[in-house]
Every structure is written in structure tokens, then in C-alpha cells.
Amino acid sequence: AQSVTQLDSQVPVFEEAPVELRCNYSSSVSVYLFWYVQYPNQGLQLLLKYLSGSTLVKGINGFEAEFNKSQTSFHLRKPSVHISDTAEYFCAVASSNTGKLIFGQGTTLQVKP
Amino acid sequence: GAVVSQHPSWVICKSGTSVKIECRSLDFQATTMFWYRQFPKQSLMLMATSNEGSKATYEQGVEKDKFLINHASLTLSTLTVTSAHPEDSSFYICSAHPSYGLSTDTQYFGPGTRLTVL
Image (tube, chains in turn blue, red):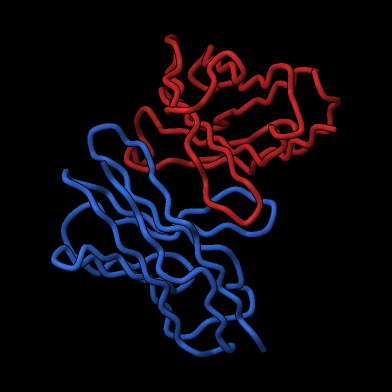
């Protein structure tokens, strides 16, 4: 079975400060890892994904994430956040066999002026 | 590219009635579509996997007779909530897995449908 744990339910941060949203996963098979962003009353937008290869993945809006196999982590980072980054962020794992996505609980990023 | 639409975006219905939600991939074909349910301030829970031309596969605990899924074509899947009750009120989100062309390892999500059952 696969699972995803997002360690922080809420992350408040000031504008232009760096941020890290933490994600740990567990799986006994090869997985794909994803970060999605959800704005209020909207669907999910893909930020970035890790399939294989380089462990540092760059995504849209200046976000990046690093896959760490030994620590089973896939933390999301941004060096300088904007007010517009305020949203819900979901880490997800997908089995390479089924494609099913298992989501973490979500982290609310609150960017303050 | 990779646009998924849902209709309606919100719906209010009376208890005991049925509601149909459509999920369409607008610019690609999707062999597989997924249906999720999201309660306020919670994560997405996979309800079922919908494959074109075959029966949907439901996750454990999801009532297949209550949540009817039809994937009639490569661009359309529908979710019908039958005999809806207030506890069925939720945000329903679909996603589509491209058959080819676009990243076949990525799901593309619709904007969601807010269902309120009175």
C-alpha cells in the first residue's frame, strides 16, 4: 500500500521569504511523485512531478522539489513567495502500475504581506 | 492543451433526487478518467476509476449503486449521484489520463463540481 504524509497542515510565511512544504511517502513499488496546487473552489493544477532521473525537479511559478529516496521525501520549495502563492498544496504519489493518485492531507500556504 | 471541463460547476438539489455530473477532456482523448470527492478543507479521496467502454472500478467503501459512473467515449465520463442525501454534499473533481500525446503519466484535473443537497 502507498501513503503520503504532509507534515504541516498550515504554513504561514511573509511575502518574499523562502518556504518549504514537507512531504513524505511510503511505497513498496516504483512511484511517481507529484505536487499540485489548488486555489479556492477550483480543481488541481500540476506544479511539478518526479518520474525518474535528476532528483531535483523544477516546476511552474518558481517552485522546485527534491526527491530523496533514502528519506522517502519529496519536499517542495520556493526561494521567494508572493501573495498569489496563497493556496492549498497537495503532494501525491502514483503507482507506476495503476496510475492511481494517493494524496496527502494538504498544506495551506498563507503568504502575508 | 490538456483542458478538462466539468458541468455543472455547482448544483443544488433536493434530497432524494439524482444529479448527473459530466467530465470532458476537451483537447485530448482519455482512456481513463478518475472521480474524486473532497470535503471542506480536506484532501481528495479517490472514488472510482473509469475506463472507456468498461465498468468502473470503485474504491473500497464507495457505493457503486449510489455513484453511477459511465465512460461512454474517450472524451466523456459521467458521475450520477442517485437518491442524493445531505451527506453527499461535497466537491466532486474528475481527472483524465491521456491515451497518448500529452504526458501519459499525468492526470489533468477538471475545475470541480460543488454539490449541495438540501
